[in-house]
Length: 378
Image 1: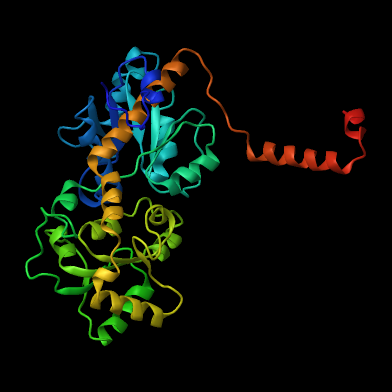
Image 2: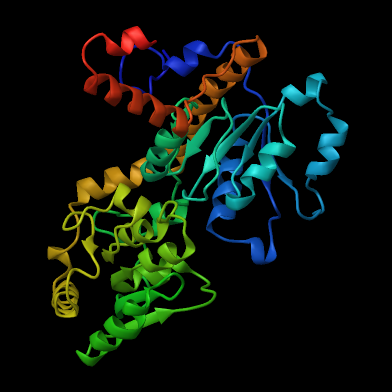
């Protein structure tokens, strides 16, 4: 019979509700090359590649035309509102501060928000599903879009990290040439001033071999396989940006390569990294505390690595096969949701903040007044 992802004998609720074939998917991105290339874009392209194995999927650009890719303005003209084609496709938007404009352009069409970071300050229209890349982001939209359909679809490590990461128990892994010649590895991008200007010089003064990686690296797996400890500290970067760490793959990549990870615990990093468990907190009170713990991890990494079984479970949950399953379940539920809307069912709407505060004020007033006063004044 059919394998059940939920662990029970019944098929997932989304499978029971989806009455129609899944809508084709369009991922909306500004472009796919040049300065636009970054973590968010790579995740969208990876997800589109995975879903293409299950249903028609394409990447659509909206800022600039690219050879071989459809362009948003052309598709909107070819599929005007009111035509069957306008309701036939599910659009996925994701691009941070531009999401409100994208939602306006796609008004009247099935659209879902693939939410990486949170904190951009916009609200979502009623009925727009949210596909959250982390529990941190899921909790944010669970607060501010509590009546919208919500789903958790954590990002996946690419297969190379699973296959070649030189961690204990990964028999297919290939160690980096020269072994672990780097005591401590830091990637400059997103790193705090504390990390670069205080901790790194202090570690070098203790005689540790510290590499600060900056710019293009031909083989990141080899780089991480060659490091004993990896430091990641993005809290200051995201606090200055005003938005959250969306998913935090670098610490997971380091763990997949058998590195001891010292990390900040902001936003989505706290989804998986528990201090003293899978990873260790960086900036733990004093510079001296960091120096002592990192030096001890370099001297005896086995004592600081997470349990192999716990790590393998985490990596399995962030594999492409698991991501494909999560997206399939979410898309079945989203497809059924838009079928209901097309049939005339109105979407639920969360009350406004003003309405909630007015209700609380009335409840407090009713408790202060003598019994029956509020009723007589009504």
